[in-house]
Picture 1: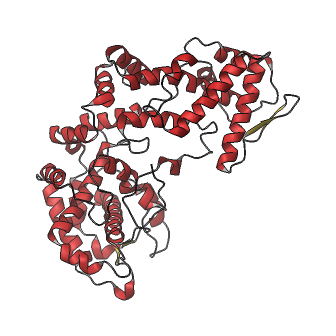
Picture 2: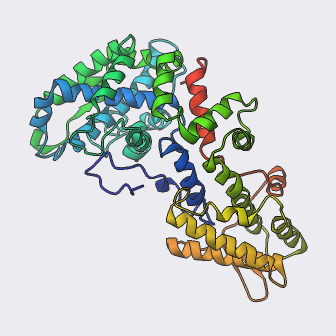
Picture 3: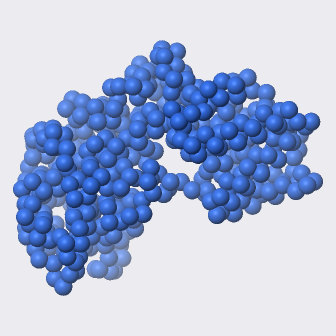
Length: 462
């Protein structure tokens, strides 16, 4: 995926690496499992967009914008190509941020009108902002500006920001910011999705607001359109948003069918895993679900997971054990741990070789896998396998961190003395898990689990 570094195009691909650097992935393993996981779900789901209700709320906001492009194209054209909205993406994303902040403030105000336990992204941050004696903070104003917002990085961490990558991969959004809603057939289906109340009523009130307060306004002196919260927020808007936060709205057959289709859960490997998941009793046992799917389907991507994941688990858990707080030399316990992984029968390097192709992984993932596999096999063939394994893993970690421009977490001297620069702490229960071969990655099944529950349960808080 492309890195998100072009703020002129709000519809560039979402990049999970924004939230995943050397601070949480010291062995560079994430690129390996996500490379394989994305062959299953084609980037339509990720590890941070896990709530189907926020998928749907984001879809609703984009539906409002789609309606604006259809009904008020001339007004949009009159606002763009000059400061502050140089292009349509400036205006579109500004409106999305405006709506997200309006949603959050409406959710905050709703309990004053009737009891509710609804929550949305940014609500906790808003409560903190409103405790401050500062009428000019982002909790007290609404700005049609992509870099504004209640959250510090609203355009990345808000509802739209977290879902724009998946929305592009699903074909909901087009990459061309001038015509983001060009999939007419899809948007007609979305219109049907929101054709009944309370969606229809909420859309009517919010569209009227967008028209009168944004599209029909001439920006002053080239500055973004901005309002004090009391100029926009009223009981009608609060009730409009409160009405569409009811959990049951997100688990109806129409919504369920739409998202299962858009997420690609009816075809290919995703369908095989989804079927195995639905049939599996313990839906949190992701390893069991994948192994069940392997037994039931002739699916090479699932075969690749079963072949590769025990090895990735080995590298991850061995590295974490090395980084355990208090480690200062290669003692008997560390040697025993290394020997355990070096002799684990579920790790079969020869079977892994068959999957080192672009059918399953991207080039960088293949390169890292080959390097780690070489470390593993050469260590086993050395005079002192466990010590060699530990030393080479530390060297590999140093190479990964250097390539990122980060400081390494651990180093080892010629006397095998280990120096921990950034240690890890584990409870006794977590330490026991480090000694077990249970997998560490679930290839987005945890996200699938969360989305499925959102589509099928009606009594959860939103």
